Image 1 (spheres, rainbow over the protein chains, first blue to last red):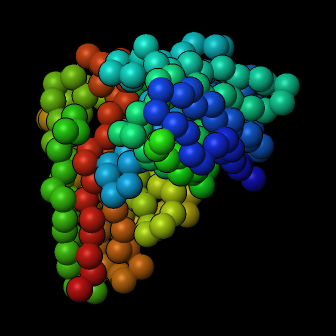
Image 2: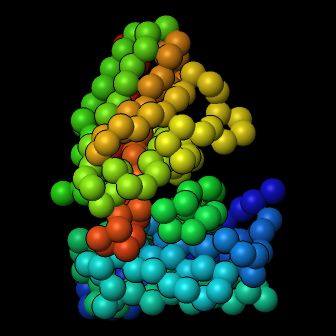
Image 3: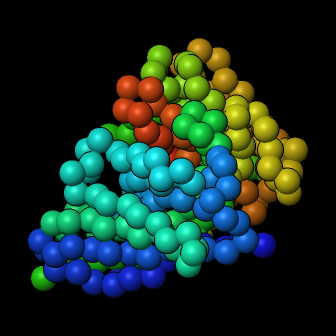
Length: 122
Length: 110
């Protein structure tokens, strides 16, 4: 059974750095074709893909946020970490950790965590 | 503004067939697979259709996907009340080197 669980702060102040952890089970991030990524959804709005890290440490970022995002993995602990700098109230959203299967245009976001709501407010 | 364009809403009565469109461009839908995700109220999205028209295990065959040129469609036949959800299309975009989503379509079963 595949599970992904997001964890981290629910409230951050403007200009602070957000760090979220995704802890997963049921698959390995050392398997070819496997990636773990982050997708966010502001309240009442659409999904937005942020970043993804592949089994071989290849990383992809959405261009508009590239300079604010970092993604890393700890394969031994089955964890992926998202860091987003200089948080702003417009970054208030539910952040989902997702399992991606396949590469680039062949990738589907196969399984999703339950999501964690992060509010940016002073 | 989303890269892929979907109608904000759709509706139908139980048993009806409804379709949801997704419009893109030569850098995404025209040259790459389309994926559809279903988000039931208060829950995380779920993969509904992959590689244009393939259904993951457990997804009823009432759901089907198609693609033509720079547009794609999701069709739902035999509409049920439990199909009420938000639906999102997604694809890889060659120009952005990343995945893009549509703005989502809220399906209401009347």
